[in-house]
Length: 269
Image 1 (cartoon, rainbow, N blue to C red):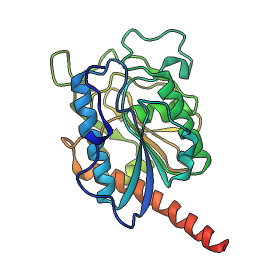
Image 2: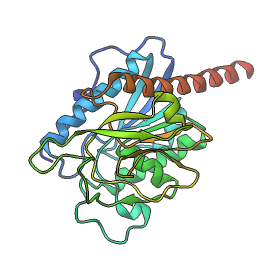
Image 3: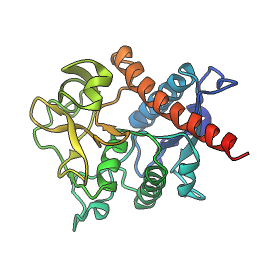
């Protein structure tokens, strides 16, 4: 690896709340094969912003870094919610691709399998799940969906070679979706730097947002809290209000789980 990211690099300066509203499992891919120094810097910043936002909203967290094998990914079910952050591309074998795409980057099949195990466990326990970028794609793959190997006409989605990787992307929200309700908008400007995206939808999922060229930018399950966004709300170069709205909705859902668990425990005494 050219620039290894350490867990200490992403820990927020602010302390965790003493009496958290919810305790969240954060699945992060801090390192992946052939990570570049530029991407390592982005992961440090984005992850720190995500964790800081959780603290500011009154949630505590454990960070599970899939750089190394997880001891027991199914323990994600023990938390009040699951947040999946960005990283490298998903191994095509996870969604039936016969040969790797020539532009695949940062692929780590073992990390993918750990993440899919965590998603399955959290969903079986009816925990709210929020996926960002790679995390959103994993949510689709976990439901049997597929991924576009490379977006040929990429102008809306990432910068050209030699230019900044991230761009401000107009994104149209689908009316009536959970995401549109959370963000209270028909269009948002997302920070994007992706060359892949959701292709065929997974079972039970609907499109919650699209780019102006029709590329899927968000998916959700209309019947439960299972939501993925392709752009990066945790990029602090983007709109703070949108980040806070999305993370607030997630933490609120996780808090409801925590209260239900406490009530059930009290009833069993």
